[in-house]
Image 1 (cartoon, helix red, strand yellow):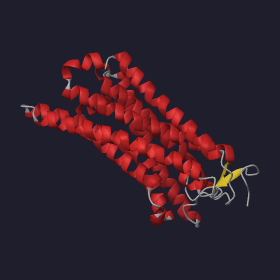
Image 2: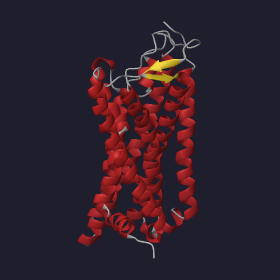
Image 3: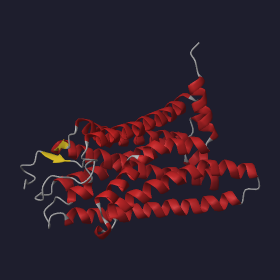
Image 4: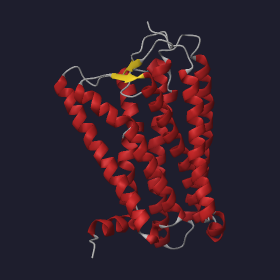
Length: 308
């Protein structure tokens, strides 16, 4: 068995043994990837071009779309290439880069979702203080903090994971380099250090999740007190998409990383990985555009715009 000093590549999970099924997976992933590119690209362009969308909520949404585009581009193109060319190999440095980028982008997205929950809390529960608490400088600093925390988190995990000795082969039971699957290749005593880091990370993630739940508890209390039905509808139209995105992202990611080993199986691991790494970037634009009339109007103007 290779160890970490002599290992030059990892072998990713093949979706199927037959080449025809691999090509089918290629086209399926290609469709999802193009949908993510189109949806997030339209949202980014619409927010950037429409001055009426230059508000804190849409500034954070633009950052979320950027993170979604980058995160799905970290895993899906490599998986498509492997399926098309019937190749499972990824270099050692390529695997480390994939782990780092995915952790960086997904943790930054998680921190950004907390910032977006705070934005909706201030907008609905403390509207008179919204301009002071969420000015342009404050928004840039909060977005930069989310990206920065994600970067530091990814550096910690990546360095800790790839400093471990690997003595159980190089076959990763996933279509991309995922930390829980890589840890299975580590020597029996060495991987406990990274497991401890994952537990601490899970506690931090749970704390952020509690913050989001408490924020939305206060938001829904305030919304139900609004005398105007139109006001309640507008508040719900901006909050429910964010809550749906948070629920999908957090539930699948936490379960994938912290599920008990007794219920682990290759099929379940694959489904969970697709749910938290591939599905959210593709469906987030749809969730936001379906419930938000301002985004729909911005995209409609962008599609129908013609140069003079």
